[in-house]
Image 1: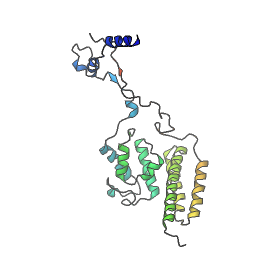
Image 2 (image 1 turned 120 degrees about the horizontal axis):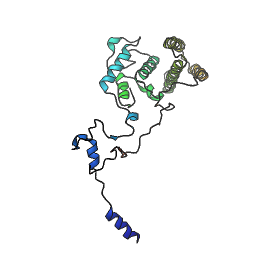
Image 3 (image 1 turned 120 degrees about the vertical axis):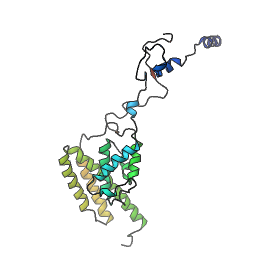
Image 4 (image 1 turned 180 degrees about the vertical axis):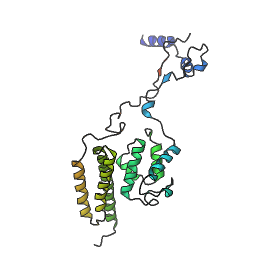
Length: 135
Length: 117
């Protein structure tokens, strides 16, 4: 009895077509022009929260400018491959200060154990570029 | 002392250096929490830096340990009750506010448009 009912329901089931979704996704394909929307009618929940990644060249520029404005650093030696302690002659406490300045620049929070490991500018750039909430 | 450059000594020094770095980082952030105006912060930060620099050349491991413990005690004493935490970091106000929903869920805003319109 239940099996017959189940089979009957499955037979009467209407397949949901994905067509309306497609129509709503690009309004240009709607023939009657009712939906002259310029935004995407399908909204995902958490795009704003998940944030967007900054691109690397912009991150590199900002990081380099922050490091160049540092008082103890010679601006001509600052290159993307510079090691903070070996090339630029910074102390470990200076490294902490540089990391804090980068945190403030990008509106960021780096956990303590990660912040210790940043020793080159490239490392910092990769860390920031791979974090979705860097502004 | 004969154990000047053994591996254990170096390991202990490295651990101490890491503790010092973390302590300096936290105390610098705390200084920023207390001194909201930037010119005050710069003054306080350079004072803090001088304190750290004054003890830079100590070599004895036990003295260093005691100094680090004293520094951490002072940090605990001076911790700000309401520190500034970046909103989406743990402890901030936006942390896990909007968690990522399970994938495959979408809202379709068709505003009542029927398929046959």
